[in-house]
Image (cartoon, rainbow, N blue to C red; front, side, top):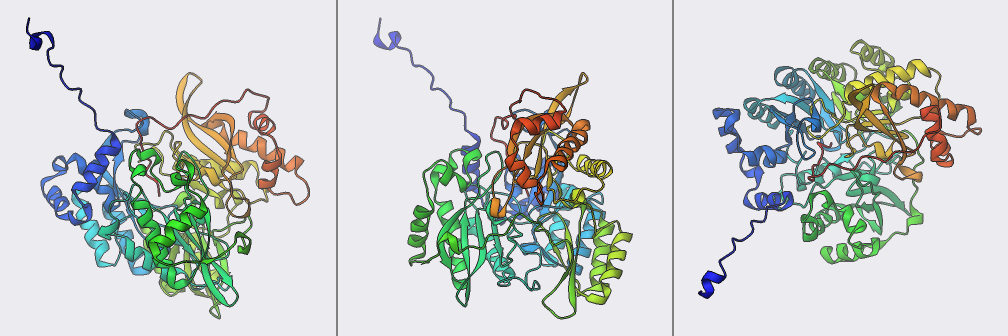
Length: 575
């Protein structure tokens, strides 16, 4: 017998391409910002002509996702549900700044193309749904005409740059940082040098002493600081929530105002160069350099200075004035630094507005203000430059379009992600649930007198930011009365500011219909046991999990584990 016959060739084993490998291959093959003509061709030929690499990846660079079928992850495989023929789009608004004309156009788009439904997101964007492949082209053309774009609102790129909604008009700010926020957005968004980052890259810039754009949970957080007579910025990097929350690391450097753009750009370049972050999309954010790869504030500073080519002045952490755990939403009437003017901030429950409401807001901004509006990361909206003697009339006019300035703590602190209504990765419905939950809590505890951030997220990815909420509800499914139903897992005690930290899981879950009663029991426990002047955050911090779990359930129970993130590396349609 010959040697060849004795040793037949064994077929080479085919190694399946991972999701990360596929994404990296497709990103190297094409910059989606340069290929919009392909989408125009899809629009001419119809939905069936759209290539899978566009629906699965490239559309995100244009702020577009495929829309789920209303069931969420439950209706699909590998932690991702089925896509429909429709799309959802996020419109980038650097620093949340809008003109009445821009908002009026968005309102018309919402009525014509988005079934009259829009959402303000937790990154100051406006998100639309129900878009067809044919309408995508028309919508983006209209946005381009008014100086707006969805570019960079999704994808492995620099996302919408957030900032203080009162930038330039707040009498307490150290510096108007909105020009810097807009400059960073214009420099890095749609810049071909930054179209291929390992994952998304979020930037926050604020001169506001409240840190109202949450630098603690951004990849880059620039916050104003005063050194003698000079105002500059401190730098925090590596913040993020998702399935593994991580508060941003303060880099011990003073950033002069004329250095801030270069520092942000260099940080993005450092992120871009980390090849180890491209191996697994579930661990591809900048925060993982600190969480898994041994980076420290000092080693990051060394890399940053090497990239810049110069040393930065030192800035010890004790120079910071960190804001307390207080409202950062700028809701209500706020006197501006300009004499005789105020801003009026309306609380938009769960961020949802109709096209008519958007158009009416534009009209009110023209009638009562200067035609300028600002969105907030708490999913709210402000009209600015309102003469002081017109604020009361504006508040009444806002009520006529079902927007309110004076609201309960439950209404004011409510946040909700997209949920199963449109997101393919969500497990529970969130928007309608959040509205109902707020109504229930207002009826159950009408005199509740404390700030309470009540955040609802549809899965473990934390697009509803439940990790930084007083009470964070994480969506899941549960068998209840013999039927599989929406349910929520409870976390408490999350915060930003002086007491920044992730909420802690309590080992308690409840069917959606039972959530209001559970929260009522826990809050009544707080009201009965709180010390004088003790706020909710402090109470949660000193109260053990077993006690809080017992309050929620109404009796002692054995703790249950949180659900793990779905297999397959899915990422939610985050803001």
